[in-house]
Picture 1 (cartoon, helix red, strand yellow):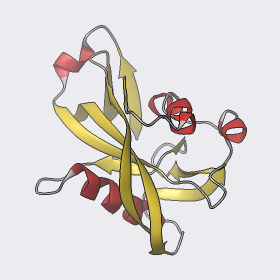
Picture 2 (tube, rainbow, N blue to C red; picture 1 turned 90 degrees about the vertical axis):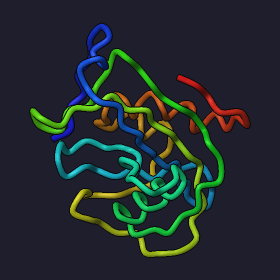
Picture 3 (tube, rainbow, N blue to C red; picture 1 turned 45 degrees about the horizontal axis):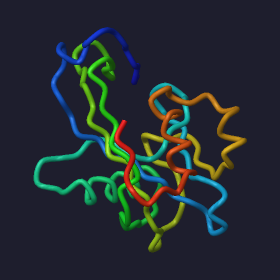
Picture 4 (tube, rainbow, N blue to C red; picture 1 turned 90 degrees about the horizontal axis):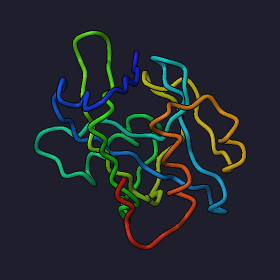
Length: 155
């Protein structure tokens, strides 16, 4: 189960890991695709950890496909998120300080569906998202996505 742990410079206690998430809009560009995690039941953007031998864009595209069944292309970097005061724990032994890259993506094909990592998927407006049970590290990304700023945010 993914759990966020915060504390003064807690990042010193965990290795760094690069993660990538995707902003996938519907055709109207008013609603954003979210997935409900199978491990903790919370909503989040599709994404996950980068694997050796792939680029950040490839990691983003692979994670979206694995979690949603959609084929996407990473078009633009929206933001980079890093905090030395936060780690993500997957059980007792797997803890990481993430450097997370958020990409705007375009859908090239595929069929929207579920995976072993997701129990539900859906498109939500910014107002609807505010009422969902989301992981805290994901909530802070939503305003950046809807800001549609041309330069990347550094958080």
